[in-house]
Image 1 (tube, helix red, strand yellow):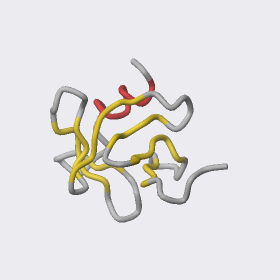
Image 2 (image 1 turned 120 degrees about the vertical axis):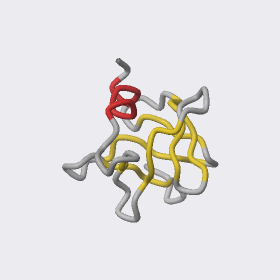
Image 3 (image 1 turned 45 degrees about the vertical axis):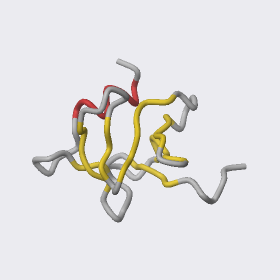
Length: 77
């Protein structure tokens, strides 16, 4: 059963790919920690800005598209 207090993050197709709990971002499929979220901004574990979580829960890069770096973290590549 999934917790209702998770901040969910979706891909463009609407599938949950990650979630944030207490500011830490985890991959939904395996629970692996991949970064952090602060004020709606997503960061890598070493503090690099990846993009922003929209109100709909989709990640947008600085240029408005889904950031490849975030998707690579989710996929583990």
